Image 1 (cartoon, rainbow, N blue to C red):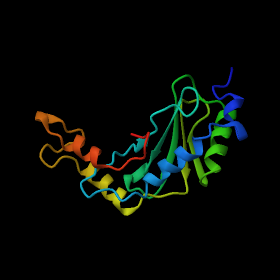
Image 2 (spheres, one colour; image 1 turned 90 degrees about the vertical axis):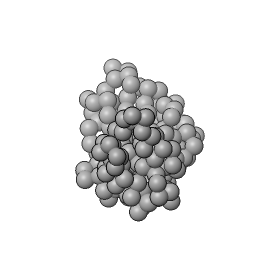
Image 3 (tube, one colour; image 1 turned 135 degrees about the vertical axis):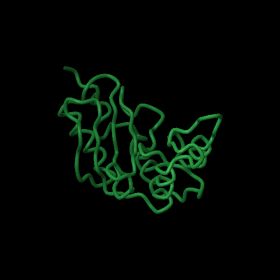
Image 4 (cartoon, rainbow, N blue to C red; image 1 turned 90 degrees about the horizontal axis):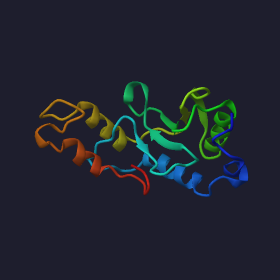
Length: 164
């Protein structure tokens, strides 16, 4: 099976902006988000494919949702990741931040790394506002009756250019 990550994207020939975009996404974890901002538990996603058929996300948590650890995740739209791709993506991430653990990966379309970053207090508070949900409609997916609680809160979150 042919790798979705071609040699032109690896090592010294990787996309010049990969590290820059990863650093920007990781810095989101420590931004000073406004008090009314809402941060979804799934974090933010880079708006362009970082590799052919692969998108990158930064999530401030996973279990417990408290932002006590962060994940860098990759989602493939083409096919499951193979062993070489998992190793190559891990190496790229490790060139920017320590990687402590891998989840999913080989044989799946989702690959995640627990990395050496945690969410700062403003983002933890934005996560808590998301988990608490809309006080009027008691839902994190509020849009009921034209309610803009989620839409407005997400708009207040400070995200790096190119991320959503």
